[in-house]
Image (tube, rainbow, N blue to C red; front, side, top):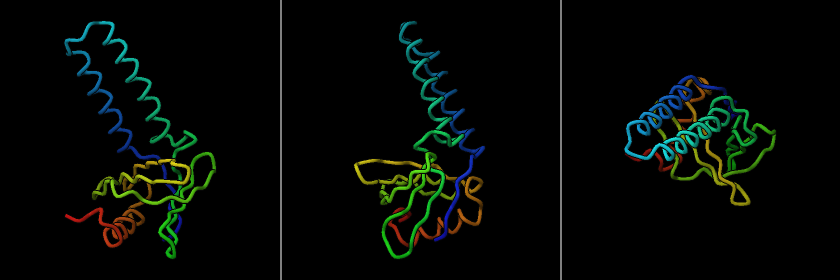
Length: 143
């Protein structure tokens, strides 16, 4: 499998915004004291900022910006935004659907990396090839 460059995705942006709006709405109508609501609202905004940098802008140092799967090994080559390259194994708890891939990788030194992929973030052709590869080589899509 060739090198797959990962770009920002509007679908992932919309998903992140929808989840944050939902969380803030639930906090607003909950029966928590005002102080707890403010604390939870602040935590939600901090996580939203982290999510935005890590999965949408891909500017966080541990954001995955490229993937390569050499055919002669079980390990993937994962390139992060800080130009660090690590060899990682794909975890079986990854989510594979026809519109979203959530790939969880286990690296050396107990480092865990997650990447969110949509057809628009890696290109429809690469997405389809990756989907077929995952269907035929892993038990992720046994349905």
